Length: 74
Image (cartoon, rainbow, N blue to C red):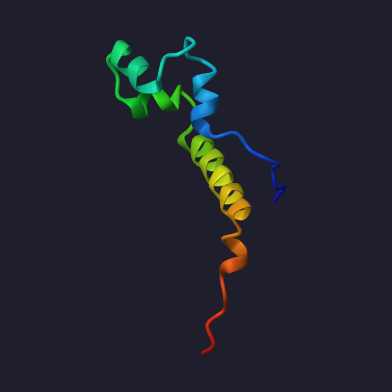
C-alpha cells in the first residue's frame, strides 16, 4: 500500500464543495439532511472511510504513536 504524504482530511475535501465560510453542519441544516448524509455526497462510504483511515494513520505516525508501541513478552 502506498503511503501518502500529508493526506487531506475528509472534511477538508467536503469543504471544497461548500460555499466559503459555510460549515458542513450548516449546509446539512440548509438542505434538511443529516450531516452524515451530506458527507457521503453519493460516494461509497468506503471511499470516505479509507480517506479517514489514511489521515488518522498519518497523524499517528507524525505524533510518533507507532514508535511508542512495544511488544509484550509472553
